[in-house]
Amino acid sequence: MRILFLTHSFNSLSQCLFVELRRLGHEVSIEFDINDRVTEEAVALYQPDLVIAPFLKRAIPESVWRTTLCWIVHPGPVGDRGPAALDWAIEERAGEWGVTVLQADAEMDAGDVWASVPFPMRAASKSSLYRREVTDAAVRAVVLALERLQNPDLRPEPLPVNPDGSRGRWRPAFTAAQREIDWQRDDSATILRRIRAADGAPGVRGEILGLPVRMYNAWPESRLRGEPGALIATRDGGICRATIDGAVWITHLRAIGGERGDLKLPATQVLGSERLAGVPELTLEPLAAPAGETWQEIRGWIENDVGYLAFDFHNGAMSTDQCRRLWAAWERLRQSPVRVLVLLGGEDFWSNGIHLHRIEAEDNAAEASWDNIEAMNDLTRAIIETDDRLVISALRGNAGAGGVFLALAADEVWCAPGVVLNPHYKNMGNLYGSEYWTYLLPRRVGSEAARGIVDNRLPIGAAEAREHGLVDAVFGASATDFALQVAGKARELAASVDLQARLDAKRTGRRRDEASRPLVAYRKEEMRHMHLNFFGFDPSYHVARYNFVHRVPHSRTPLHLALHRRIGAANRTGMNARNTP
Image (tube, rainbow, N blue to C red):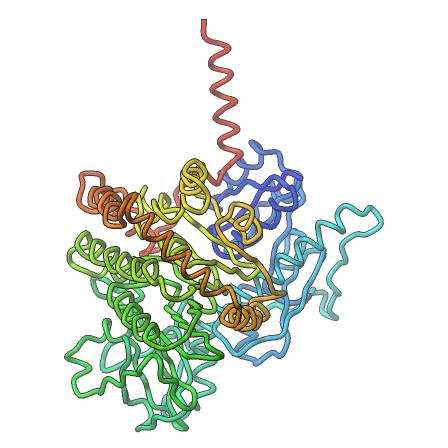
């Protein structure tokens, strides 16, 4: 089918659905929902068989849904209606939730139902649920709806009509008052729910040490105690705040007002050292797992002759100091007598490369960008040069830009089935990229294919990445099942009789590659290009970074996404050529 995505942005759910529908043989083009006129123009250009709205913040214009079949992907079960479906599910402690594909009509979220897929709720933030359970259910629901569309005997089912004549259950957006936290009355479970239900957007408003803020990314703490509402500790940029029955960690804040008020940053950076004077920094050794629940960005452990290193950085972004701390943890793990090392990344993201928000907050963004990419390079090189152990990158979550190439520094790359990769830099102001990609990618896929991958600018699913040779294995029924299987496969590798032969071959290959062209030469050439991106006359990277972190609305859909506009432009060019004397 010819399918047009109408979406507010090309987010994780939209990308996963895009990858899966193209894998099934459908042609998919994308239009950002800017205004009704632009949407009507896109439909007229593309003449789609179907319009799918995987992520919208307003209604599809009547001029479109009356003439073209349009499906809304709603993150709620059948009958749920309104703009805050997941917020309500978390706040009301729903045990099961779902995703529904319904037909657009005059009433918001009240159209006929084409498919619905349930899932069990997990104690997690709205963002995490959306990226994992909601995305998985959405893909399955859309595929099921497409199968039903091909069967003339199966038609959509209308929502039941309520006694008052309405359909379904409409629930409005949360008010700021509904999200308020009373630190003198609310227990830890309530506070966690409130912050998790507002995670991503809009965050929970509050005041910390006299500063009005929005709070994000809350985690339980089972050991620390203090006066309710008081800040009792900091760790790696996060703050620990006492409750009436314990404490919670809050890792990120947005200051309300001020010059950089819309930047989401580590909590300690937003509050500043003066406000936090006297609050103790309680660091944790990455390889010493604490007893009880707490928040820890980097954690390592050893099981069955296998060393594991997990790094759960918020939204997959890796700042300069995070890269350096991860490098230090890697070197400590290497000192253990294990035979296989597994890099696990985070549950939601493996890595998305440099930390654009932290860079934007610096006075000199070019210098901050340079320092950040150099720290990523140091970490990547340390992994490449680990020649006495077999190294596995196990991707439980998505990876993008430099994060993809960081993963390729390992000997093998394993992927969960729903993972989406964006192995390119160009969408961020035509960045050239580093992390030794000019060495790592061609050695896997060849020079010609490598250039095609970084120029493509489109997401790649796990199965396609396996076909390209970007990853070595895709397995597991889910991300959770994948993680369980990783442990078994890594244990088998550590016990294999041919491991030493593999390590000998690895060392020989690394010496051969270094003699042919040393790693320093790849890095020097990559950083020559990056210097132009950061310090040169073309401000494209700085403009793109600013627009990304400040969430500047799209003014148009990029042509690499909008197939229908490329087709239209080609047709117009062809007509002009034919009409030219």
